[in-house]
Image (cartoon, rainbow, N blue to C red; front, top):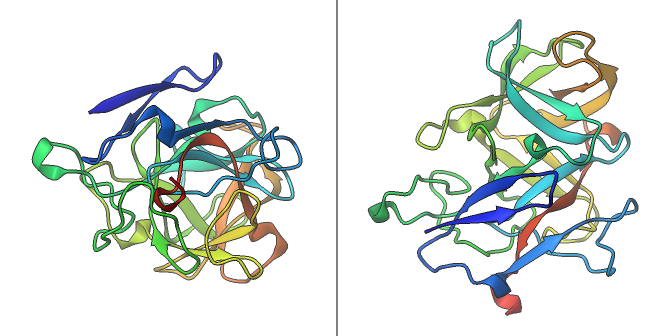
Length: 240
């Protein structure tokens, strides 16, 4: 089945596919985070497969963002940026899970060889794929140069039925945590290139004016750190 989840009056309606296990209303946590992290009830949710969330760059507070605008250089693929506003639906990313292919759904597993299921938690060291909710393309990187700084370009590529190893990112949780929660600082390291998902204050002035560059860098730096922010969180299976 396909559930239409209204993500607040400014977000519109966003489709979320449900796995063969089914999603009940009690499985969903509609979350709004406070400026200091966590939600307004002081609860920190697990990030699970099937959740739809925004990633916030820790230092600049910009959200990881994409849109149907190609790069004018490098690969020419769909661009990825940091976006300053909170209420934009182009900043939602889907953490995929195993879809029932016999029923005609697309293969949205975290990686092509994964057996992960909807509502499983995500552990540090796990390779994952992130799918842009609006355009259905995968967060991707490769050896093309990023437009502003000449680091590794980060783009969106493919679609539901098209993906390659350039879409795989390995989760690294800062500190002693083993399972990804909202209050944890994380890095995403690209499996093919070894580059960390990175952003900084350098901004575009033309097509994506005011938005900041997102790229990959091979060194571990403070500007590699991201936090889970607004979204629709599926409760972890073991917590029910």
